[in-house]
Image 1: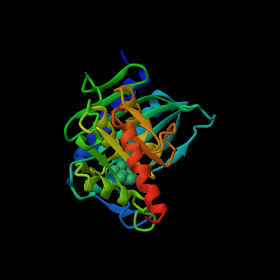
Image 2: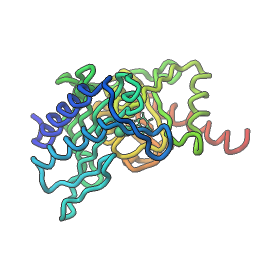
Image 3: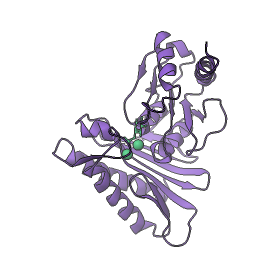
Length: 269
Ligand code: IPD
Ligand code: CA
Ligand code: CA
């Protein structure tokens, strides 16, 4: 039922997930990039090398945007770009916390054609293809039906440079908690989005993410019937600075709360 590129992305994500699973808990090399807590393990690199090699074997002309190796254009500039996070949740992985994923999406200009997120520890494979819906291990996904922000279950994340550039994310987080809303921080934006698609969470927001963190997850949420915009409800693209992804029903309420918090702080109240 899926296009060839989705099938290849699935096979690749599953094999990369196996590489991560085999390395999980072993004594691997860990180093820091741009700031002491932004880690990279030898398994980020191993996974990425495998993913690029395998995708290139099937689609030699496609370009890449991958977290560890950046942009690769394969000679002729190709409008098909694989957007890859070889290990989303590196800090968890480095501390032997089994919450992480592999995320692979295929984009064509400003369209996401397919998105695959794989959590090898739970053997959960999330797949979306444009126009064909979202799936978890072959079962069709739908976002949740919660329409009241105060009864919702949310997830967010914080950027690595939060100490020098906190934006308003801490205040927004505190605001939700003070309202009594349960908010989680899992440490894998790809899984956060996949879980919104699966109806496990009702909404997700975060600033300063990169295209590889979100590309697959955005399509998963959209194809599961959810809504993805910027905080202010402007259309969202994967290079934008902030993302708001919900079941659609709490979107206005969550957007208003995030923006109100921002305005309150900027106006010094
Ligand atoms: C990180 C995770 C985390 C998010 C960070 C990302 P990485 O990706 O997605 O949830 O809060 O902003 O950078 O570094 O584990 O691939
Ligand atoms: Ca990431
Ligand atoms: Ca990563």
